[in-house]
Image 1: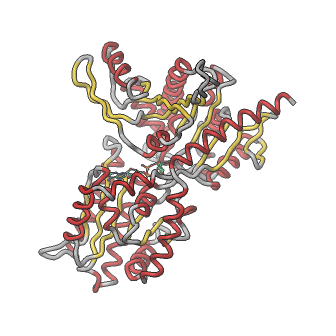
Image 2: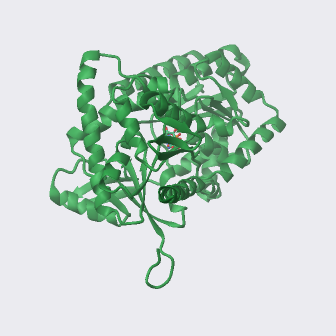
Length: 489
Ligand code: ADQ
């Protein structure tokens, strides 16, 4: 469209995700302080010049009173954010329950919850009902703010029911859905009691996107085998209606990392770290503390490496930075103590009075500290058991301009498809293989490191988050136009 002045109007994009990219803290009855988190998705969309993006999602806080809701809505409006208010009960059932306890483990091949089967199957239905109710609440807010011509981009496994709700409101709405996790083999998806309803709802979208071609293929197989629909090279067809399915591998804003490394404060920090670990090679792990990241397996592999390579014991250090997430879920608490126990045992076994082999931190680092750490690292260890993409591997590569360190990467991370030729790929379940890869990485000659780095660096700097967002949005526009042409024929 065009504004009255004749200047082209930007297309409006409504980005719908479970969480808004802000953290909100209540300061008084009607005052809020907001902190925008500059995560990947935010910087990706800031970079897309042709669209005017607004965010719709949950602010992560319970606001039971109307006055507080009004004040938060106003404060968020300045940040181009629109809140969806979810009460505690629905957060418990929808977010902690259906999303994090059922879909997240299932999509990462960890299966459905096994303990207390009866209780699980009984609560399963109520959790799925809450999931649908929550998705409907997101749809209500989208519908309220939707204007003709807007593009609506739904994100992730929290909102698989959303495309259907949106199309029920308005069948001409342009709706895209993107999954940030893997989509598992259809044999895994088949075990989900609500398997068909979720697939049908996602198929209501015009465009469905995944990180890799394999995930897209799994999704199409699930639709053909479970729903009996027809898979075509373009996507999935249901009675003449095509849902386009494709791979859109995400990237990072690599320039932001390069710029950070030029800052005086970051350079000082790099100098300090270099001095602190002088004479030792630095190995690094940065993960959310989640089962899927394979943190215990990684640390056990490092132990095996120390065991078999005594000459390396005082020449290498592993820094494992693990941000706690979902801390109210018992499984995550168990994982934390398990990791602490293993780290303690290994430090007791191989530490000396002046040095320990593993530094484990249970917290997140600010962006500049993270960049400095990436820059001084000799070997990064990404050993996810499953991971949609894994951006840590990209961020590490973006910061290695001078060091040209080695990336050890799980073959079960989506990033293995893009960085596989430059990384040392491993099966994270095979502790011996990972230990051997650590030895190869530490002993790798400079020319081979350089060659591998060049490959990865070229990829990370040319496949950015901005390209990803632009490609998805323009493909969504094209898909809708093609569909209109087809129906007119
Ligand atoms: P995540 O599972 O969160 O994302 P990842 O892609 O690695 O995994 O992104 C994590 C982000 O958090 C990175 O930007 C990283 O810098 C940051 N981070 C992690 N630990 C940190 C720490 N200790 N301190 C500071 N920052 C930390 C999901 C999917 C992925 C997919 C992304 C994007 O699980 O597979 O790549 O979405 O689609």
